[in-house]
Image (cartoon, rainbow, N blue to C red; front, side, top):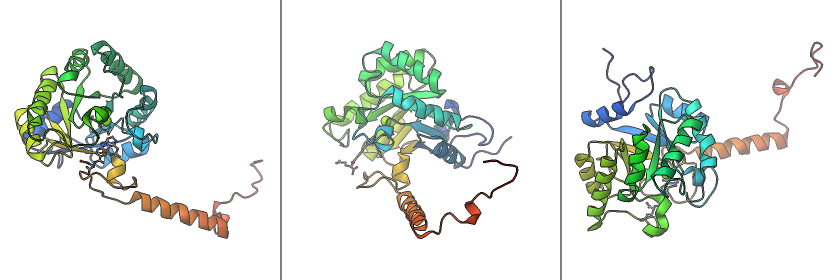
Length: 286
Ligand SMILES: Nc1nc(=O)c2c([nH]1)NC[C@@H]1CN(c3ccc(C(=O)N[C@@H](CCC(=O)O)C(=O)O)cc3)CN21
Ligand SMILES: CC(C)C(=O)C(=O)O
Ligand SMILES: [Mg+2]
């Protein structure tokens, strides 16, 4: 019998892909697991080797890769190559791809067609869609085709204009609507649900009431799992961070120092040196 993993759901970190059943079992056993966004091969490989069980190719690539103001403008064509890179770079992580705004809202047929496109073109293992009760028909159609769906309720950035900006969802009387959304996505067949910017107590209640794992971002410690955008955790993003972010590193500072040192070395003639320079080899005409 293999020893249980020291973290999260994976039965044996070196052996095989994380599966939905592992995530489900982790919830039952009370072992929280960690999800991070990833949009490229290097971070994907680093994060899975660090024990991140689930990687999300988020539509937050809009802000964090492509430089859009919000997630609303990013397209399937822009996300597919990123998801393919993440899948190619990993052996163990379960890879989820966000369906971008406009690629699933029209109805179950559009949603299924987009989900199929992601699976065929990227090799991702599941897709994620925003919305509760209103998105249940889409979740049903995609799961009926054998594609796992992660739901996303609470603050859903693709509908920020309807929600009135970056605001906590489910406070006061709105708690009932959030509970209805949670039950609707679970009944529709979602294998997990992201709770974004939901009061901690309410997120705890949802986590107890649902049999599927809850993945919190700004939803407190009682969720079954947590997710963050990697550039936030790593200190790459400039400007004020949302309250739910914990910054674990200062990559912006590290990279700036490296680039400054390099630029100074070039200007002052310290780089390149003989060590970095090719000789006039006899057998090599170039
Ligand atoms: N880098 C990044 N991190 C994210 O968490 C993230 C993205 N991008 N892009 C897509 C969405 C947008 N999200 C966001 C973005 C900003 C806030 C924010 O500014 N929150 C503030 C204000 C909250 C308020 O006014 O009530 C906060 O302090 O939490 C929250 C969620 C979460 N997602
Ligand atoms: C913040 C997470 C849940 C997300 O949807 C994204 O990164 O796009
Ligand atoms: Mg997203």
